Amino acid sequence: MNVLRPGSRRPARAVVLVMLAAVWLAAGCGPSLGDVYNPMWWRLDPAGGVPGPDATQLRILVEEVECSSQSSPVGRMSDPSVQYADDSVAITVGIRSLTGDQNCQGNDEFPLTVTLREPLGSRVLVNGGMGGLVSRTPGAH
Image (cartoon, rainbow, N blue to C red; front, side):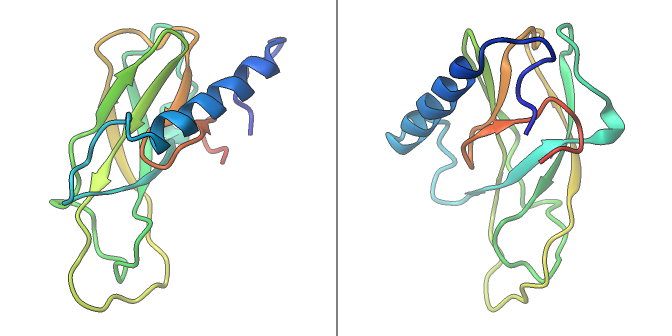
């Protein structure tokens, strides 16, 4: 996963950020989705290109983690929750699970645009619901 810009010499900083994000989420300090929503996995949409420091909109692809018989997430997703820190931007998207038995043949990714209230800058992206850094190289996992 390419979480650092080329030429960056701060791999230890990235490791520390991942550890802090994990502790933050485990301690319940992350954005609350309530009892209704489950977190979704997301990555940058390759069609949106690489977000630069001035980026205030991010095109992402979200994917439901729970079995859903490949049902569309439209109407079941929360609005994106964005948490800003000096070194990171954490984005959380939740989804209401379907009731009853569901098939688990995998779920399709769904495009979503997240609007930031301030430019991304040099901060790393964090999946606030699932934990972990998100590559700023679209399409990377």
